[in-house]
Image (cartoon, rainbow, N blue to C red; front, side, top):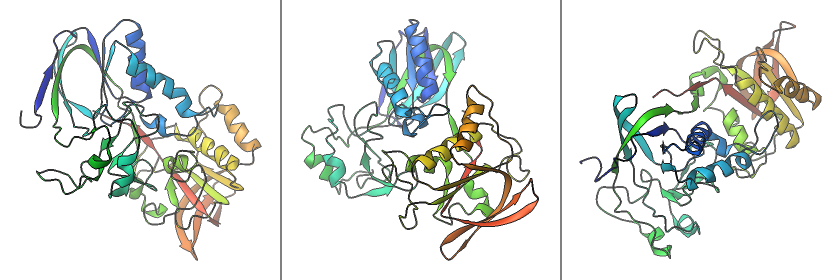
Length: 371
């Protein structure tokens, strides 16, 4: 095994279900199957299950705490006797036929053992800080805990940024020295895991479109142009600003915010369809921004797709709470004297408007991941 030093196989799981993806969809599917008496193999490529939902602040249309809903389900999955959770892993091959599949899973090393107590000493002494890919505006260390309620509940080493990245030498041992439990092990190697399953569920989640394609919007150029997900993290108490809506450029509290729906959607240059989902999380962000002290919140949209239970009432709630919702199309974003200038067409009046904002948040369309 050149890619993986250990081959782990089981032959007693021919009636099991393989679930690819450990987000909320994969978690719920695993619990439903396991509670019905079926063996489940849950494979997740990141260090912890939970997916995007674990990092959100609230859910719409009730504005319930996101992690408060998901954390009990995460715990149930980890403790369930019928569920095997394999994190930091990817399915690389599926052979066979319905009712009789053999799957090959490659699991990357975590470099931290279950003896970890999450004391955080390793993170304190780690000399390497990298941008956190979750929100793009904060930093984390090369050894880190994915999130406070993460399961599996111990630290992980990002070996791509760690000074001890192979091959063959260890210029840094700070984390190993401070670890009282001797839970850090840089000799770990990848594993190849074989499982026999009867069926496969793909719950691979979604991703946002690459907003850097939309040159006119200035994402990646102007620091105060953010993605919708990055705004959500700013409003989260466990996020990079502890729940305050602050401008990345200077740390000032945002007073005037523009939320732009339909970025790249129904546009022949980018994506010709509407993903329908974005309207509701934009309304959630607008309502939450008002509750976080942002005085003026404006939202541009092409059409509001309030298609689910309670969604129309949620739209009305945004209006009642002072969110200004305008049918309009953003043309471009400029910057003058440190202020962002949005140039957009009010498609009801036909006027072209130039207006300044402290922060502009764009909501790219999203799509299901394909495997």
